[in-house]
Image 1 (cartoon, rainbow, N blue to C red):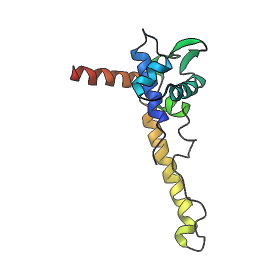
Image 2: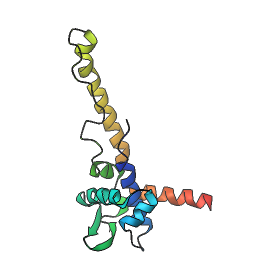
Image 3: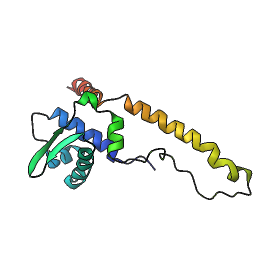
Image 4: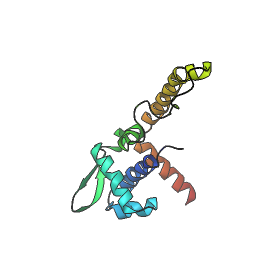
Length: 145
């Protein structure tokens, strides 16, 4: 199982809104780039709006960034789209056999490791901004042209 694609789509939306800031970033326009249904985009845009990352207005086509892209981290996006709850990236199986030494101790043993791994991942996401992603797109696109 992988992390929900909402995370990648949220990054895609914010990046495209920035690259298209002089145009209209409607859900249809964004969905065309993501290659998905506009309803999927609207759902994720609702999450991004609730988190204060984008501005959308009923009856008005298009979205824009609510904050400077230098101030929006991938961790902000990760949290906005409800990928996982705090300290729940890794699941621990329930009801191991208490008669077995491994079953009796496995949860207490691996839970701190899982928590540390999630914290490390979130630290990396917090160090990367949407501006970094936009720059990466520019760099890659200029290499192909």
